[in-house]
Figure: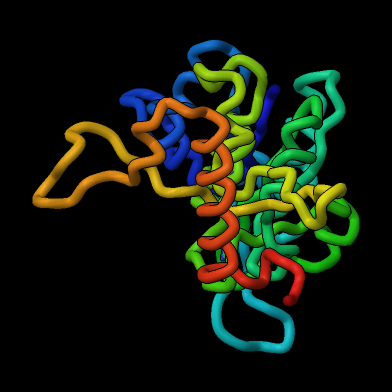
Length: 244
Ligand code: 6GU
């Protein structure tokens, strides 16, 4: 999957030395050639003398606004670099909150084009004309969309085929989907938080591990893990479960 990032801070996506996207799972995805992140400087497409990408807001007020022309031209130039159609995503605190379901949907696209805004905002006319999906990573304010773009790239890359060593393991994380029994006959699919995990030693500072995990009984272990996932989700994220 080719993932373009349009930014005025392309150095945040530098690959040598390896940084956020060059290590761990996103680094493996890149090394395998499963994702190819291409950062492009919006400034390079600014047609004005000083390669300016922002200007003062009409109506006054603090901060600067990203201008239409550099972003519009950058999007079209970058899209023309590869025939695969790009799903346009604008990272913005005004966007729809990113969830694991959105990440899964984005991971099924052939190509993504991420736009990281900076400044107070982007001229609304170019947003309307580009019609990107608008995505926020949470209810707090970042200085720009670049870190949010990296969050999205990390979350997408780990879902692509071949990236995680153990093929099953992305389904077993927090926000993975689980079949939860709701009656004697029926189950429903729910997204749940993860269960607690333990490893050696069997006793640490006087604390043991749940006996069931040492039992070797895979049926009991999986039933316990599902119970723990449900209890944790109920306690910490009741909004993820139906009321009751
Ligand atoms: Cl996507 N961008 C910015 N600037 N701030 C954010 C955000 C994005 N998501 C949460 N806060």
